[in-house]
Image 1 (tube, rainbow, N blue to C red):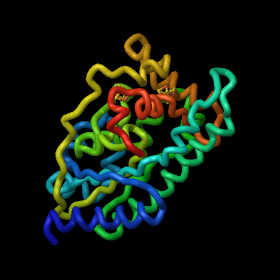
Image 2 (image 1 turned 45 degrees about the vertical axis):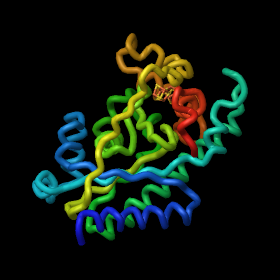
Image 3 (image 1 turned 180 degrees about the horizontal axis):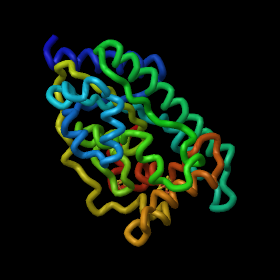
Image 4 (image 1 turned 90 degrees about the vertical axis):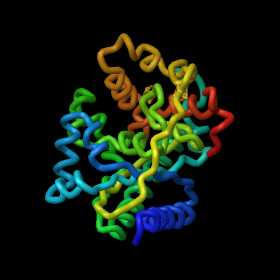
Length: 253
Ligand code: SF4
Ligand code: SF4
């Protein structure tokens, strides 16, 4: 099949799986060597392990397919209802459950696409890691960032909150990746950016102090553990991006 036909095949799988699950989706395709070259050194090692025997072939001809499912609107609404220190945690757990549901959907869909193309699926996330490590940097080596492939393939731009901001869904998405050596059409990176927007900074004191902290992600990790929801999530910066950002009018879940 041609590169275009293979992209259409993957889009058709994603469309069918998304419809079956009632989830909206997005897709992009980036060159494997560009993704590899952008990752942190420890993540390069992890990606090499995942690609294992096919790393040289991947470097020459491979692609990384980035897939996303968007959260349903009710899940984002459920984030941080009430007041600081008196949050409605039961409501917030609606978001935590949607997070788990999206991870499961992505894991199953990426496995299906990998099977169809003879590729390798990289699942959405390793759940429960935040409380298992004593510093956020310990899990960089355990997971490959899906955001690099998503950014390079135009699923979205890299937001000031470090999440991928999709032009349609904001950062209310979850990601998974598929490695393949099949010829498939690549998609360009996004030209859009956050510009003057600071809505996520206004929603989170750690992001707001990002420049002064050693690694704000560590404060974020501790906050997720502190919240003690049904999964290790927060989502306040995601909600702020969707509803309060300069681009709120452009986003539509
Ligand atoms: S997830 Fe929560 S704590 Fe972490 S950066 Fe976003 S708003 Fe801040
Ligand atoms: S809230 Fe604004 S600054 Fe933050 S990621 Fe979204 S668009 Fe970018």
